[in-house]
Image (cartoon, rainbow, N blue to C red; front, side, top):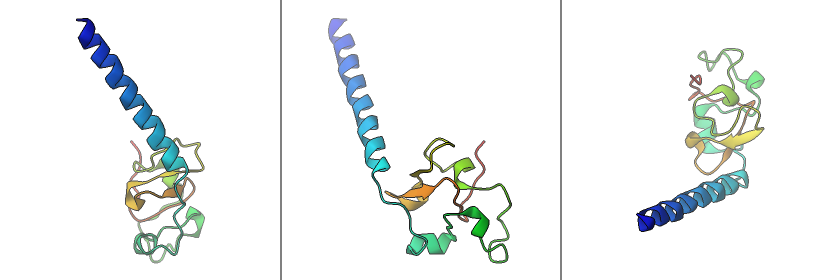
Length: 103
């Protein structure tokens, strides 16, 4: 029983440290530029109020990365990761055509 507990604790510590390191690495990740090819393809804007509403009819006022299900940070974070832009951060106040309202 002791070895199971020890294994559990060691594994838990390993997982926790991995999450902490990956979160720190993401915090140091570059921010997505609007000139990035993926950003252009998805119509990413760092400021959602500047979305071309004629080109992106799906956009509605109040939609931004901070309340998108893909935003990997807290709503209060200025920037956080997004799987649409692997290894880069998006602005909480940003928007792209992959927007999906957080449940």
